[in-house]
Image (tube, rainbow, N blue to C red):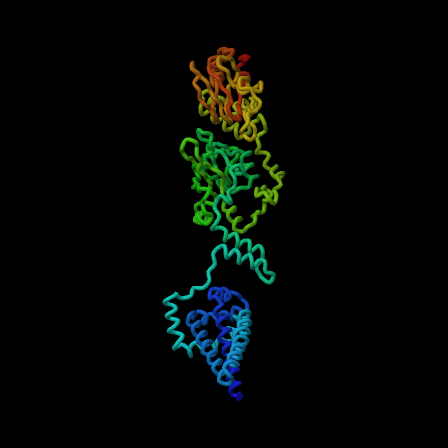
Length: 534
């Protein structure tokens, strides 16, 4: 066995080329083009390496054919060379050991771990090999592209991406923080989640009746809740609360609580689209609706069987843009004036010192009292409606109302659901709900300041409802005024031909015959007329 120095050099060169081809085959082809583009977006040294390796890696089948052809040629030539130098059996053993250890195992072990780095430093050699073997490799690569298609890279599904994020989060050397990982996971989950996963239950929703008057107490409650948008409902004949609009709190900023404007007036002045969705509506579509200007609050409805073979929709809750963002970010958003009640409860309350609202105490109505603004409104209403009040001086009208009684009648409790302990058949003075009884004497004219009354009148007790600014028994004052005009004695009593009962929380202004007598008497005295009024 004669081995020259030239043979040894050639064998070493062939082993190096075999290792190069084998290592580059594993190293470069294990690099995904998509992954290289991702690495390029970083600010590390790997970004530079990836930018230089990517053009080579994009050659795909051309690179594969070049490396495999080169590897086969080198290994075959190495086996033949060793077989010529030694005997057939010894050559087989030597060539196998050399190719396996130095041409396969060691190169592939190193390139599998440092593939990007090795690919970067061998890029010039790789380009040379591509062009040297192009006359064979390139046509073969075109055939492979035609048969199997060009390489598109590795793409992940949502679940695969979530797993990838989880792995990065758990890896100690990773720069991915847990909060960022949660946000990424929440965004990936958005496609699979629907409205039912985020909806706020109907029982926890703050809503307001369309007939509610925006007085001080109502506005104070809205302020305490801290919501920017409030669903407005109307109770239908089936006692079902149907959402008819959305009240924007910012539109109430110029309201005067003393005006007690009903919510319906605000709805008519500032109409807003009501976004209604089903419980199975996808959160991705919900986000699109919120971002397209359809609203930042949605009413969630569900179809139920009414046991009559028909389906009807009922409200089961609401979904706001804040709820959706919280689901994406996987955390609770607490603004400057909110504080979470507890970690397991998403309900929030205002973190505000309500004692500061004492500066508005002058706005509150004291029980059984009437404000100066209301006095002006009542005087204007009486003078405009009844001719005999027009001849009474304004100062006397003020005295008349100030000396009269204002009675607060609560027919329901604060939640407006349960009846108070009031008798429906007794007078209001006796803790009842009756203001007038048919065919009974009375000494009072009444003005409804707030609330509702039901009236039973006529032979068949015809039922009707009256509300704010309705006046009952004005004839009492009219007959007294006529007697004053005619200088005659007024009637001793007045008998009503109807019944009136309070049906909702009300405030009633009651003007008695005696108080009205006294004011007329003051006018007579002022005019130097002395008539005795009992």
